[in-house]
Length: 175
Image 1 (cartoon, helix red, strand yellow):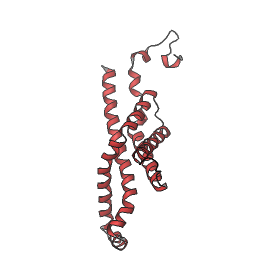
Image 2 (cartoon, helix red, strand yellow):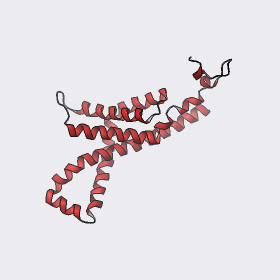
Image 3 (tube, one colour):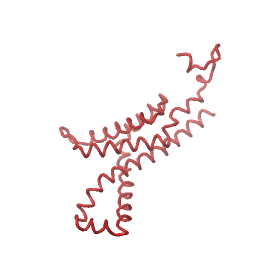
Image 4 (cartoon, helix red, strand yellow):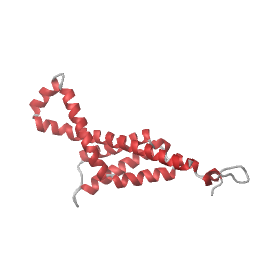
């Protein structure tokens, strides 16, 4: 029963970490989108006038968070397959390093960009920068919330807990 409870608990932690990572990645993406969109939407003069007021930053922040919240659902739908593969790999292999999660987050973001582009086109440099930043931030937030404990549920597996004649567990014998 302990193994079952540890797996269920780990799944809750993974879901929470995934939600945090998707929201953080969406905030980076919405900032990358909104920095150019707001200027085009309001016009350069109007945007500067809004930016100079006391409430202008609040309006821009609310718009940025709103765009990020809506965008997180799109990111989740597009990146579901590489995210599941990355999470499964880190859990099964007990990869709990920050760099591993950053690289896998960047690869998942690049997968989304290159699968959504029409055939024969390449993304611009700005798109790649925002995409990689989005993947790295998502990977970092996932690592902070769930990735540091990757594979901990395997400590409750019966075969790993058994000791051999030398008093060492299976993980120390090379089996």
